[in-house]
Structures are given as structure tokens and as C-alpha cells.
Length: 438
Image 1: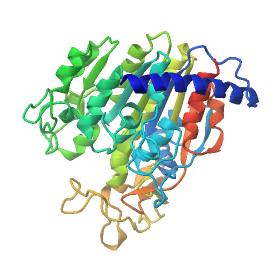
Image 2: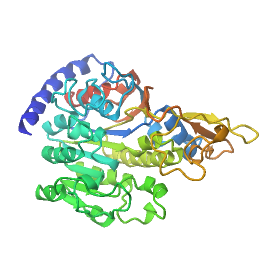
Image 3: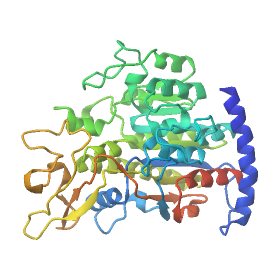
Image 4: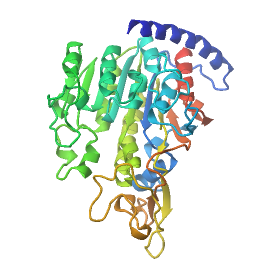
């Protein structure tokens, strides 16, 4: 896409000039900003303050701060979209605000407010000669990553999104969603077990990627062999969630499962070889699905993965202090709350609304739906605060997104900018300022 690429280069130069002015006016001392700063955005899709708190309690207790909250700087981002009708964002508009620095209507995926093509942060990074990567624990063609690497008029154009990644030459593409990369009738490399596993693409995009110079992986052994500089890994989609959805499935013994933290570690190895730095966007999309389905049990598993990814990144930062890490969310999902379990062992009544998709959690006793009299469904607790005898449960107000502000934590050059409360477009502002200050 040469026209957009050239626009990105020119835009990056303009941003550099304006950012120098911003940096000069800043109260912070940016004299130690590295020459080639890299940026990682890690999104826990649907992860609001209550989700982060519940993950903290259940996995880390009260004495050890979880890795994503142990980063040195923290604040809040608003999530309201640039939509004349709605006060609550979807993932497409939320991620696009980060990607282009503008509020856009819901459904907009990487395009401007009037659906015009504009350079995204990934385009600007490429214009600077940086390596680029997209990683997901679910479908790598979902709206959040597409907002950076493959703008489209409709977030459901999954095959178009995959093609767009290849058109742009995104260096590292790791995640699930194999079915969009193979044509209908071609089963791909991962066994089709679930009802949604069958391929539904238009062409063999894996073959195209390989012809474009990508190394391809589909299981643990082929993944371990990846060296880059271009790599495509389509591995088991949402493996931890599948272990609760498909009877007899165990992600620990699935050769096509690659842990999210391993995806991130490999991405850093490959992208970090670029002397001009890299831009990497990572998402845990499973956490959003768990909110829609009122599944706090799987939410804890997704939270575990997010923290493991943060641990990999912060360990990498020890030898690469030029890397800025931003951990946040596009929105909150489910209207989740943390509630007491009473002294007599009987919890307060649950009032959660009907979830988006109660299957596969229907059984003789529903696992994620309110029980008669407001009883707590199995997937809402009670949970024990690690290292204590205290317990809590969760409740839900909606099967959809909510408009609450979301936490943001950060470490690395200019991370201090994220102290305070800011619009979600501020992510774009800080990143472009960082890239323009050297």
C-alpha cells in the first residue's frame, strides 16, 4: 500500500516536529529518551477496575502486587467513543482511538471519523523503519489488532483483515483464527473439533504468506523453530477457554497450544533484532468473552495469562530499557462487581442479567446464569482471596460493555505521562511524542 506508507512517513515527520514542541513544554525530563524507543501496548479486552481487582485477589492475594499493577506509573483512560448516539464504546472504536488518536463511531476499525484512511501507529512505526507485530490469545484478526494493522469498514471482514496484514507486511502475526486463513474445505493444520473451527476463507493465505517470506508455525515444535524476521503462527484458539467448553479437551496436552507468554517471548526475540526498534500490540481477547458470558472462572485464567505476559515483558525491559510498556483495556465488559459472601456462608443474592451466550455453560443447573432466588452460579464464585480465609463472589449488571473508565499502567520511557486521567486517544499522543522526541 505505497500511498498510505508514504503518507505515514510524512505524517511521522510532522508528528516528530510537533512532539518536540510538546516535549519541550513538558514538566518531565525527556533528556534520557532513547534514540530508537520501542512500544508495546497490551490490552486486556473488557478489563475494567473490578476485573483487575478480582484477578489480584484470587491469584496474588493481599501482600503481592500482580505484575500488571506493579508497573511504576498508573492512571485512568476514558472509553467514550466519538459517536453521536452511544456513550459506550465497542472494541473497534476503543482500539482505533489508540491507533489514530481520534475518537470515532462504534464499528470503526482503524479508519478516521468519516471512514477515511489515515496512518495508524503501526504505519508510523513502519515509516520509521521499525519492526511490527500483533499477538492475540484468541483470533489475531479481531477488531483491536485490525485497528492498527488492517483498517477495514467492517470489523467482521476477517478474511480482508488477514489479507490486509499481509499487504502491510506486518512482521510478526501470532494467535488463533486459523479458519480465516484457509479456504472453505481446507481443514488447515489444527484439528476441527469445535463447531466453529471449520475454515471459511476465500483463498490459502498461509501459502501466500509463505511466498511473501513468512515462516509458518501451527504447533509447539514449529513455533519453537521460528527465527523471523517475518513469522506467522496460527495456533490453538482460546485454548484455556476450550478446556471448559469441549469435554475431554486439555490445553496442557494439546500440541497446537502455545502459551500466550511464549507467543510474546518469541515476538520480542524476533522484533527486537531490528536496530530501529519495534511496535507490538498484544491482546487478551478471552477476557472480553468471559465478561460477555459472565464467566469469572475463565476470567481468572485470562488474567493469569495477562500477568505472565507482563512478566515476560518486564524481564525483557531489564536489558532493553528503551521499551515502553502500556497495559490497559479498550473498555469494561459485563458491569462486573465484587461482593461479599456473608458470615453464615450464604452469599448476597446475585442479580446478573442474562449473558450474551449461555452455551456451553447450560447444564441441569446453569453455571453462568442467576439461580432461583438469586443464588450464585458456579462461574461467579465464591472465590478465595489467596493466602486468606476471606471469600468473595462476583455479580454482573449486563451482558454487554459498560462506559466506565479503565486503568492504565506503564513502565519505560515516558511512562510517567500516564499518571492521571486522560482520554483514550492519549495513548496515541504519548507514543507519537516518544517517537518524536529523539
